[in-house]
Image 1 (cartoon, rainbow, N blue to C red):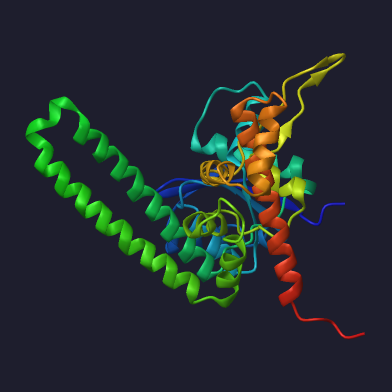
Image 2 (cartoon, rainbow, N blue to C red; image 1 turned 45 degrees about the vertical axis):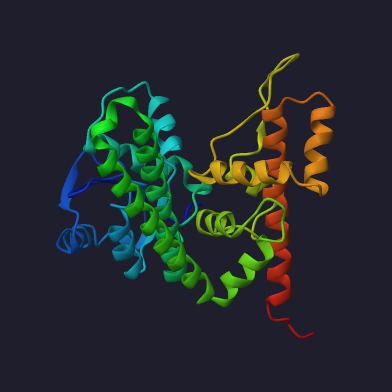
Length: 319
């Protein structure tokens, strides 16, 4: 039996959000601000204590509402957008409005309730590190774009401006890196995790910070779960007697590029990971297949090392 009496779908926009109660044909719109949150809670006060609210990731616009609901002790599930879209497609519906999306989220919650986990917010330290890492990635992307512009033959008259922009971006990236270092040093647990991760060939300080920010679950999952979350687990594609080619899934956004950088460095090393990569090539594996296998191995090793670190540092329970 479900411990939820009803399900409320919330489709979040930049300025407003739509709410739909499962089984009800009506939807209501609210402002995506504190007043709108209060109005939503007031209008649904009879249902909310025993309800599950389901919403999607919408570029951060959902965070304020999640915080407001959790501060009131209400239960929230932040759904995987890809899963919800596939769920909606399974009904053959091509129409899309905020009201329809809110109803679909409520129905998704009702039908998938046994598999849905409650949203667990990041700690302030995790949130800060994540934001800093994301900002550095954005700046690096802009820097690469400007450097490419500098090489374009049609931008001769703009080279001075482009060079000034490049200098500014490089200075900003250096400042962000310093802030990341300070944020990690301020948290003894994070600092220990960083020191542990950099012992793995291919993982430097930047890659370690990225992994800790993007995969806070590191050390708390099984090897299969972390490989799947990182998008480096091979997925079976078999049907009858046919055995399809294994490919990896998408995984969490931003993790694969970080693991790829680590794998490229580890592949050139002379240690066990470098030998692992070379052995795969000698067995006839394609370079990309071998690199993905190395990415998975690095992630699994990182997960195991942080799991062992957690076991060492957690207080022992007396018999």
